Length: 147
Image (tube, rainbow, N blue to C red):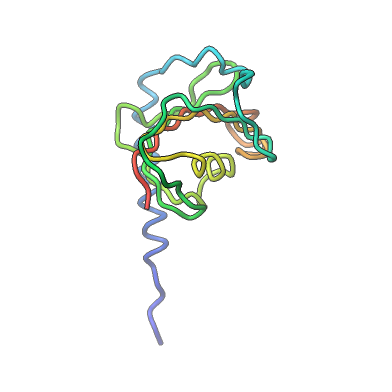
């Protein structure tokens, strides 16, 4: 009888622990919401899914992550009322495979290049679908690296 492959489960467990530690660290500080947090501005670009994005700082890369790429990012998330609910800024960067995050991230981060900072307005059906936090969510994402 062969042993089960536990590596994917271990990776998922480690990712969950890092996410929890990052989230716990973010509870001690608050990053002010951007002025356009309540709705995408006129210069935001909309995708067919309803995701809106805007490049805040251009990157220096030429390639884009794919749907299963492992990305390393810093991010901050707000609800449209300006309440910050999570951030990795000031702590360790967050790492995850794009097929293991909310759909709005999977789609939006694939539009990015290394070194880019982009704001994502993620409709509820591409976020937590009625979970917490609910409603449209806004994330600033800095793509540090991917593979």
